[in-house]
Length: 405
Image 1 (cartoon, rainbow, N blue to C red):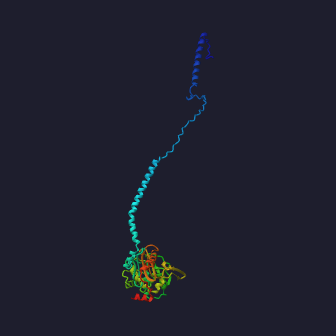
Image 2: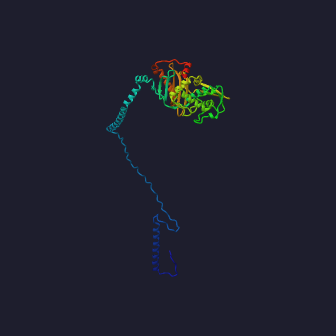
């Protein structure tokens, strides 16, 4: 290869030297180029823009040998019998200690319970005590705060429980209202209109007697005694000769004349808790009002229907004992307000004997009826041997003579 061309032709020997130099220079350049191409592929290519040839290396797939894992079997740990027995013994000790403590507590309480139980079950001393005190104690457990049972003819006290305590009497007031209205001897067929003045503004009790309805005095008296209708009782007192104030004054005067020294009235319906009396005073009232045939009839009437214009109003007796065939009730009256509890007075016949029963301040919707049943059962069983005489029921003339005396 010729590097340059010249018109001057060198000497033959010099041309050989020059050729050797050029050949050596070319060989050196070739060596450098070869070394550059043999450099590692990871080195960065030069910015010459010529493509760089990469050498493709085939990777061999290395197969991993499975590692032999050693399986360790867990052993089941079983408690030794000695340890289990020890645990059972500890549990038994706790149970025994607990039972021992409960046994000590119950052992300390049993003598007290046994003594009370024995005292309650001793019948002979109790009956002997009742004979000595003439039945002034309460031989039965009553729910009423005050109770009194007396013979209607001889006034012998058969049973008494706080009979002198002054208490609100609720609608038992209507017995006195009816008595003074009948004492005025007003026409029973006189028509009376219900007005706004008869509406209860103290307790706001409900009533089916609306203002504008007209009834006879007899109908209002029946509703007041049988169904304890408050507006009926108020209308009767409002139409009393002299008005409402005169009626209340007459009620207090009659109470004083009957010896009801602890009784006071401020209104005719019983809605006020300031109408107060005692069981002893109310027994005197029941004995006195028994002389009024209309009070006996209307208070024990089971049910009745009254007509007000195009309306027919049906009423039932508030005393559930009236519907019980086992009772022979001659006169009754119920009452209830929150301050007075449930109240009940009866003039009835038990074991052929005419008795007066007064129950005040009984808590529970039917507690006063249950107490009356207990009293009757007591008189029919235990009381039958204690009550030494059976008096005949006095006639109406005899009762009227007793009241006059």
